Length: 120
Image (tube, rainbow, N blue to C red; front, side, top):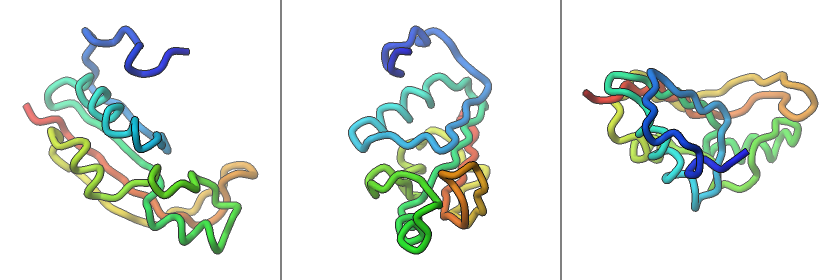
């Protein structure tokens, strides 16, 4: 499987894309978000759910909650707004979620949820 910048998608446009717990290194995050955002048609949607920087505190009290342990790979609302500046927020919240996903993600965690509509 190739990395995102090498995939032959430059001529494609999609109605929506979802990034669910897609955490990238700080060096790649903004670039990958821009590339994915560029693949969305005007008035299409981006959906993101990922662990927030506040999640680090949850990991300290519950190591079974999972998620990246590198705080630089976690999200803030401001980060999402900046990365997807050409999307109008339909929803952008930081909230708690209860995860029960196998042995690696169990318990209460803190996430950022974003639904954005691409500006025409």
